[in-house]
Image (cartoon, rainbow, N blue to C red; front, side, top):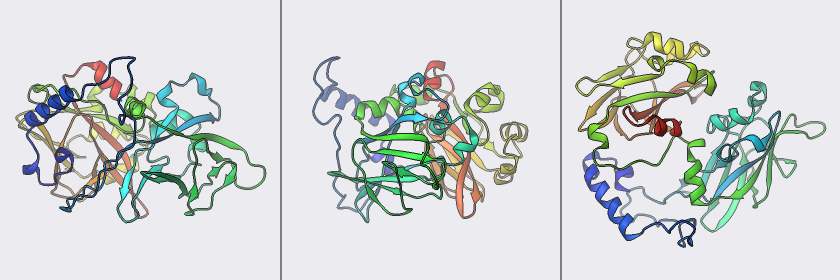
Length: 358
């Protein structure tokens, strides 16, 4: 917990301490043998009581629920791999209400919605934040429509910003229109999720993966940023671009600055279908450097930078772990919208590992 939540980096444990702690826990709490009984609590929901010292740790988000794809326009659901049919609801905690809330929408799960809806016009009928699912540790799940586009619950159109009770098996839909006969182009089912399945499929929802905690990984690896998302490009178009365009290596002895002045040709090619976004990338935007084997990112511009969808202010630095994502954002009204994202990787990791994360 200190690794993730200690704002003061000097209070975070050294990497070797983390490895030792994890290995000690693995020895003390081994996973059940294959086919054996699941240890109680592995797939359950655990809430951490509020920290009396006021450190801000009020709970450990779990993933008790997911949305299953029932049907989508112009695709055969059965042909999709299992992880592409499930949207796991990764929550954050609202301390005021005590409820865990997970957002769903085109901005929050772009990869899934693109795989479900090849028609861009239909995708645009799903709001960036279509709805939120919230709950408390004992249950009491609710759905709240947030976007301007209609959302249905059990064939009834939801009223925007009005929470409605959500039960296991409830069906959530996206209709072509909120007038006339109700016809859905995308339909999902609210279902329970086990921690095991959530971990296996987390890469479909967020850029995360199980890390290999070898003690020499950070010290011996070469860091790089790999582009994983660009506004206007689908997965196939992005994968067709050469690595010289989509990957930026960070040398051990020289900081790497990312910006229009330094990677003009690469950024122009990446943003070929969203050229207006170039104005939101500063001439010198982010500085990346290797310190003690770890990758440190610093925002050196007035434009926004996000690390795992958390803002990084001008002059602020943050250490990146493998598979964390750094993103650039544009303004849409008063809202920041991420338009390009890069995943931090150890460049000498096996292709199989880095491909699986993508």
